[in-house]
Length: 203
Length: 147
Image 1 (cartoon, rainbow over the protein chains, first blue to last red):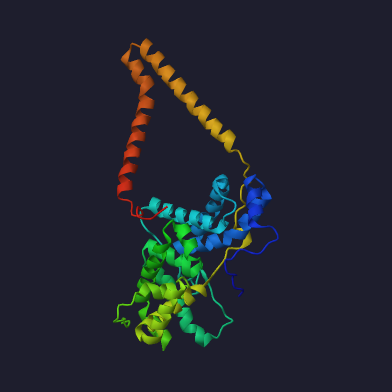
Image 2: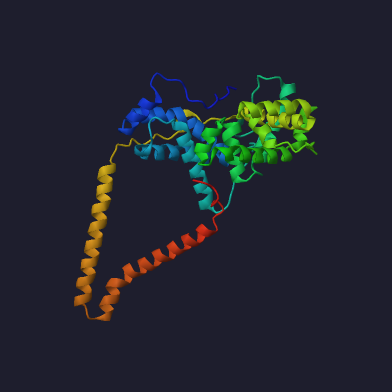
């Protein structure tokens, strides 16, 4: 099975600045190019925050539409992705708020044959070594559901999306100093939940 | 149970060190701590394992044909805004003028009820929804989430 590439935007001859400038003027091709560059990353973020594939598709698509509709407020010199992530994250909060309850679908769900629904299995690595790693990955996805929304989003942004502290601060609209303490709180909680898995991994 | 560092070292710094987010001085402080304290080293190793697990998780991406086509948008903000302003101004002028003309000419209470009943009830419904929304805001579980 082919693994999905990490979510870094693909290299292109045309800079993002030029694309955004054209999209701002209503250029449909530039909008399509921007959408194709970022939609997968937006989908993964929404999936990691909500655990539901259909919702994640909707949120990613809506985020792109909202981005194009508010391009006049966007400073073209800034990178696009944190801004898009901020829209996705706000949209997820809006959805939960509207549904009144926090209903994360579990990311570690399996289909009727017992295969993980959302996660690709890497068959190229050493199966013996990977068994406990795979178990930890699976348990970690389940453990995300036990975190508060605030803890889950910061952990997803740092450890799954690999955003820097300043990008996280921008996305969540919080001071840079808060990022480290909030992130550590989330990791501490996760570590407590997964203590037995971590110990078996160490031995 | 996880071993806990007895020397009250700030664990947040270990998390920051793992992310490469500390200034040089603090990073050096953590490096020395990790050499000396097995509990801190254990914490660092476990946090590293968690981060590695997250970073090596690969999610199933949607196929290209699963994405709906984006509607082509053209910049029509000016005409849209102007349209709203003109429409709201027109509605306000016409409503105030019609109400004034009606109240100064109508005498029959039934006629007043028939004409003002519908807009009056819509206004009451709107106010009721508005008050519900304001009440919900006070108990919103995501109030603390910064926008």
